[in-house]
Length: 154
Image (tube, rainbow, N blue to C red; front, side, top):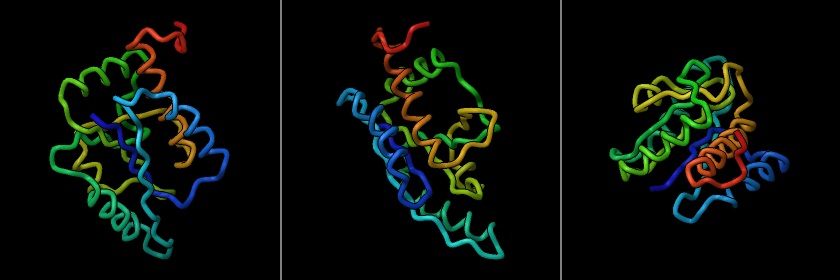
């Protein structure tokens, strides 16, 4: 199983990349996190058209057998322990898990429709670059819970 993050956005600032790398480098080789950046559309008078174009670029990277999770503040919020249980369940499915992060105008409805589930990292609206770091940390913490690693102290 692979964990993939499909994120709309231009190249992240160095501090974002450093934060993301700090957590992804700690993941075991059997559960690596791969970031695939999707180029954002240029903003104009019709943001819905551009969100849809970004959604098309996301869906082009998704395979039929992938388990897709749309990240959205209106999605299901998990505790760290619940996310650890979800990772264990995903591993049992044997499918790649794809997390989708929309651009600055949000995630396309087409991606939300394709998603197998919708997950919230926070009730707050977070900048899409920051979501990468928060998600990487949450996945690392969930893995550490599953394996009894001392990173998570509850």
